Amino acid sequence: MYEQSNQFMVNEPYLSSFFRVLTSTIVKDVKISFRYRANLIGGLIQVTVLVISFYLFSIAINFRDSEAFAHTPGDQALFIFFLSGIIAMLFQETALYTPLNRINRDLYNGTLEYIYSNPSSRYAYYLGGIISDIIVKQIFVVPMIVLLYFLTAYSLMFYVTLLFFLVLVISLGVILSMFALLFKQVGNLVGIFQILFQFVGGIFIPVQSMPDYLKWVAYALPFSYAYDLIRYYSFQGNWNPILPLALEWTMLILSTMIFFVLSILLLRKTEQQVRKSGLHLI
Amino acid sequence: MEVTLPRRLEFSPVRPRINFLQVIRASYVMDLRIRFRYKANLIGDFIRSGMFVIVFSLFSTAYQFKTGVSSENATLLFFISGFLFIIFDGVALWAPLNTVNRDLYNGTLEYLFGNPFNRVGYFVGIVLASATTSSIMLVPIISFLLISGLISPVATFFVLADLILMATVLVAFGTMFALTALMWKQVSSLAGILGMLFQFLSGFFFPIDVLPLPVKVIAFLLPYTWAIDIARYYAFAGDWSTILPVSYMWGILATFGVVYWFLASRMMKSVEKKSKVEGLHLL
Image 1: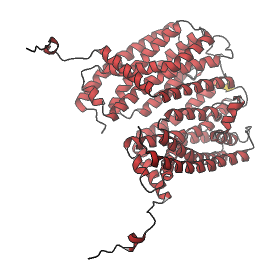
Image 2 (image 1 turned 90 degrees about the horizontal axis):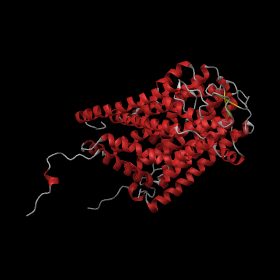
Image 3 (image 1 turned 180 degrees about the vertical axis):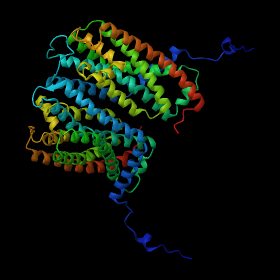
Image 4 (image 1 turned 30 degrees about the vertical axis):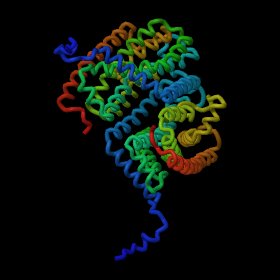
């Protein structure tokens, strides 16, 4: 006589493990990215063109006021400044565009409802998408980090800063996913954030050279401290941070924690909202 | 009883064709309507173009060029006069690419190619609509330049004429790019690379003097390089050393227009032939 296995007799609903969802999302997204090799090669060429262009830009210009530097900057200083900025920019774009594109894709493919009607962690799903993008981006980022090392021989603290920065990127990415889910047309909002992070946050222009009122805007942006610390360690301390170093670390850790908690809370809130009003576009 | 066909149907050897200008007008109006439907996007673009003025003023406060322009105002004018043209990136690259992708995924591309109207007209209309909305983004920037006194009204007139000529060149380029997207599908990376080349090699960010000779040759092949140099000549009231005498540069830019339009129509014929043999499917 056929006996049911214990597995089917358990009365509890089956829940996919958080890590299983995370792993399968990462594997799926990485596989998709590598399927479209033309896009990867194109991306690599784009990053190379960007680095070369900023090298040429650094040859053509000088800092008007080198207040940001502890000592007189050498010829390479501008290029190092831009190179570390490009690394930060690539990760920051992950936070801004990956979740937005993912939500849009699922929304237009009609797969978003499935994701919300399955007993799996949505946080893991969004997190997986962002982490997979970060993994794929290593193809572009690692050569730049190596080049930066040859130019500056930065310390281990550079990586520690980068790690905190990535947690912040992931948290902000999940928050923006939720905004995209609730308000749909957030493409331009993201564009405005991008300008704020890149130019006011200090990726391409030192915050130290900005007028006072914009410095306050920079202080309010979560990424500014990460960019500044990346610069501090890239220049092996030959960089005047916007705030005392200990305070910058405190701000970075605090903002990382706040954004991480916020992302979880917002996800819960969005789930409740979605159950009430659905995910339709109209 | 014998039915006699009307004479018009019986003997008409000419297939009905929709007028070229009518196609341009229809696709232009359609695309413009779609663009104005999403007002949030337009307002966002408007705000962004204003924000770029602030960004460039920050750049000019933070950096100075080693040669040529040095004062903060001159550096700001250098960046903004180049940016006026980079705004039209979307016209040349993203608008045609997005249109082809939209039609491809909506399944309407086959219909377009199965109708007896001019396909160049369809793409021209859409690219023109993109040029129109991009022109709206110029308003805050040109207003800023005039109000701040960085540029005179006469110079503004010449810069606008330069922009119109450049937009004509880009509409042809955009049509060619749409056809490229039609044939090879995955061209978004190519659009990204071209966008970067337009931005960095055209002299928008830095004078092309710093480029090594082989790269400078590539820069000369881009219409942006000439258009931006012409604009800087007028923006700096003649106090700008141009690549060639300014009248020659006008001629070169106009030649780009003629060549691109010729190439666009030739390319269209070849794409039509190819699509009739192989179809337009994605697989």
